Image (tube, rainbow, N blue to C red; front, side, top):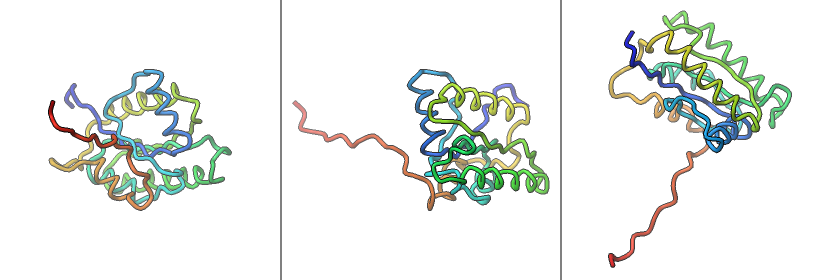
Length: 169
């Protein structure tokens, strides 16, 4: 395995908690790997097995769901459903030759920016130890494939406001 391997990690993040924790980590200028690619969900309960599998099929080196603390889900039990789906995927992966450690579920509150950064860093290190996803194909974006698979449940990415160009002065 090359020392310069930087794993591409897809994070399916709850809008209310984990996505807000990631935002807080950024505001606090906490360092975490730049190869983390976020997909914001209204709730991790919207995450389906197929979304996780499509991300891995497209070559994501690791995928995790980050939801509200257990018992604190804004949609009551969404994070518990997500955990069950993650556990199901972990059982399926050896059948296709992938390590179950490539997927995980984490829980955090919106106030846990440092926890988001810690989890992102530790998961990335775990995936570095496993090496690249053998399913990775040249020219395929795992983030784009995962976002496309979850298009019916993912929230839009914030994009910069369009700028108007006036006449040159």
